[in-house]
Image 1: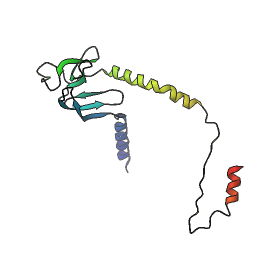
Image 2: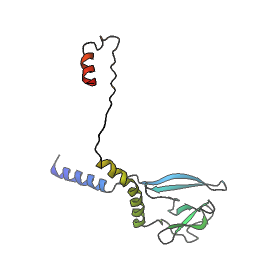
Image 3: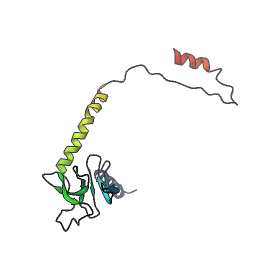
Image 4: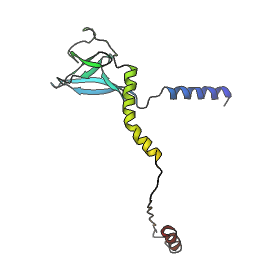
Amino acid sequence: MTIHKKIISISLLLFVCCNMYGAYLKNVPQKLVQPDGTIIHCFASGDEYHHWLHDSTGYTIIQNRQTGYYVYAILLVDELVASPYIVGSVNPEIVGLTPYINISAQAWSAKRAAIEQLHEPVRKHKALQKNEGLINNIAFFIAFANEDGYTKSYNFLTKMYND
C-alpha cells in the first residue's frame, strides 16, 4: 500500500470516527395511537439523551399532557410545547407551523450532562477502590468413557488448589 493510500485511509477513518454518534437513530418508523383510537404513523429520531417524534415532512410531534393527544409542537423559549393542532386533523404548513423545530444544542448538551452526572459517582467509586477479598474458584474435572481419569494428577491438583 502506498503512502498516499495510507494517508487517505487514515483520514477517512478519522472523519468517520469524528462524525459518529453513540446511539443516534434517524427516521425510525413509529405507530402511535390517539385516545380516540386513531393511528398515527410517524418517525422517531435522536439518541439516548434526547429524542423526538416527527412526521415525514419534519414537523415535530409531542403528546399533550392534559388531553393525551399527539399534537404538533411549537418552540417556546427553547422548550417544545403542545400546539392546539392534533396530528392528522390539520395540515401543519397551512396553519403556519415551523418544520424541524427542536431544542437548542445547548439544551441537548445540558440534558446529556445531567444524565452523565448521575452515573459519574459510580464510575469514580469503582475506579478508586482496589479489588481485594477472597476469590473462590470452582473447577470441574471430567473423565470421558474412553479415558483413564485423573488418578495421577488428582493428588497434585488437590494439593495445589487446597493448600
